[in-house]
Length: 450
Image (cartoon, rainbow, N blue to C red; front, top):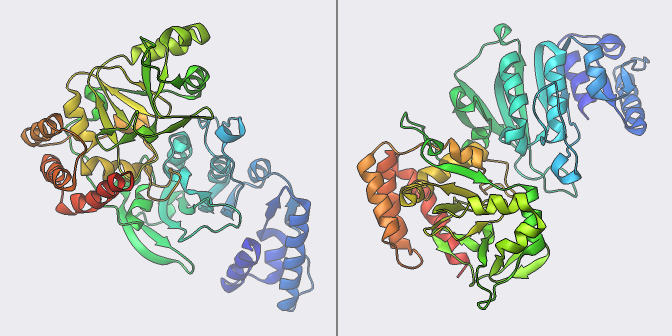
């Protein structure tokens, strides 16, 4: 229990039991039963220290409201509720910042950062908060009000009945009163043990590189050669597009002219389009060759039809929730990306595919989005993170990689993948360990589907 652990720590630092129970320690919970259990536990703790006092700072109330009333505070620790507004059909906004689809835990972290005058915030949060786009506002607030000192991550799921993986970002608020080091410590397990350090400059926008470091994902430094979004249009549908497609999708009928193939993440392997050879589930239907009639879609949802028509261009389609970036080239522009497949559109799609299918891209994106996928090692690709994907520094090697992909006939094998890894490793001038990390992951992905 957090309250007992903190009470013990305060006594070790010289506070009396009376001081702890009457003025220093506050505990908040909306559940009256949880509050009563905390009162009982602290009372027994006090008796164990030879004191008959009862705690006065245990309150039944919403921490989002009460923290502000208690401010300024020196330390906030706790385990706020986790809830995704997307899954529940709601949306959140915290502290006036844009966190519309962030997990509820982001709101509590926001409130804690604002309530602490000069001290420490350490909340148990879902790992998604460390890298999710919609939690960016609270990470920015943490950087404005303080400095990330350490990130603790779990070794295994901590809560019964759920597979949610968690982390504890430990933030020094008012860092002028603390030593701000150039690196951030990463610890794991119980008791915590050091597993890695990450350069602070890697954690400015996202904290997920801390998870990547803990899982030995090799670091890829972004150069000064631009980003994928500088040269290609990158977009993805959202729920509206998905539901519109799901309403009219059907199995392909060769006699029905004018239909367009629909590609889900499950139909995209590394440089292997599996439409017609594997099945996908869309809107409750299991389909082997899903397609849509553009006229039928327009009659059902004109806006979604315009969105699909705008995708009728040469492009690279990128899957999500995969161990490495998996992409295919749609050279004629017929395929329709089904949410959350990302579409990278523009000229020279072979060059774009070489970037996306490189070892460096998978390592970089996984570091940026570590913890946001369904599993620890999956890449949750988004349009925004691909726009920021750094481009290679060696133009000649990049052209060689693009030519290699354009000349590919059939499904890539291990020898071809190794050649691509070497060529694009040279393009990014990254260490051989990046390709060595990537190759078994991508080869295993292809092997698992055969």
